Length: 494
Image 1 (spheres, rainbow, N blue to C red):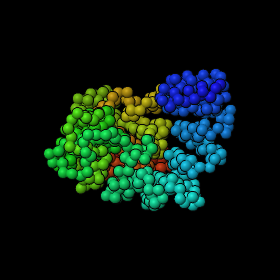
Image 2 (tube, rainbow, N blue to C red):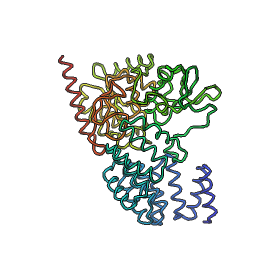
Image 3 (spheres, one colour):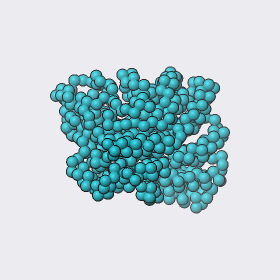
Image 4 (tube, rainbow, N blue to C red):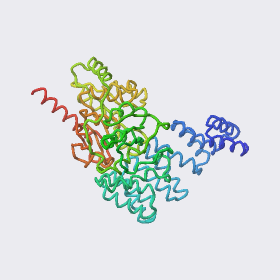
């Protein structure tokens, strides 16, 4: 094999021609089956193509030929972490660090432990590392992340401020904003929160906007003006912050919104909104534009939990009628309960906020005699999981929800919704549905003080809290089942 063959494969990969790159790497391996560069790079292509399990095979083959090949070791660790196999991932991180000590890699390793929910271990090791390397800002960031998820926002704030003193990075400012929000210090938080747009952030951390032909709104008077709001971040964020459209419209502004395509019909019902787009209408005239989540920075009322009108979203009447009829045929006189037990995989705290499918089946096991359960999950489920749900007593309805207008209509015709911290919970809350939200403390500022059963964000919601972000959800699910059974018994005897 010539190095030119390998270089040609690398160049094809770099220009995004993955099909040509795969063919070129295969050609290299025909000539030299133990070429670790080709094997490792094929693994990286599998990850990019959404095939992480296949990537593991290539990384493992590369390491079988050359155990000291560090790129394959690091990629294997990252892919195992992505697949939710933290013990194996950590073993490979440690081996890579043993080959070459690197503060950046140690930070990455510890942050993976945080993401996996191993908060005590990550915090203890990061604090020990900070004692020996006090000027390594990334280690203080990890301490802050672990402390925040352990529901210790004051300790997290101290760690983030130390990181900010060392390097003044956008990531430190954005993280500091999160812990200030967790403490309800909204006026202080919003200026720091603007760091999420900083160009220095890595692509997966940053919020990017294109160049627009209109000036960005900085709090100017809006009476008689046209403003275009740009939705950003997760679906739940856009649903929550749609409440700020009404005060803009009340100031005399003509307000339009760009949001995720799947949200357009639902968010189009927000009070005061004139139009809702899936893409920016570049040919139209606007006086200003603004990121949706930047609105509190420039409004007099900076409380992101404030509701001017509740509920502030509405479901389509025709779709509600369809679901009313369909649910009555399925459930008869049983209570109709919707369930959403995991959030989007890209969220850093998703493993801590989500419930395993086996655990969520505790609900129909305990309450199935009185209620029929319906899955509101819109993500792709494997055929094995779909079979598990059906056998366990939860009817999957994901393929019957084309967008959030379908989810909204279905939610409004259910007797009750049980959800973790995900976009379904935000949609149901904004619609005023009867809602129970299952939460791990420390993961999200927007639900208020951990332990409180009341939601300032969505008054129709009742909050249920785990003791910590670590550990099983079974004790909390058991308590919820007992509470619902007791309430239903009281209602039936009344």
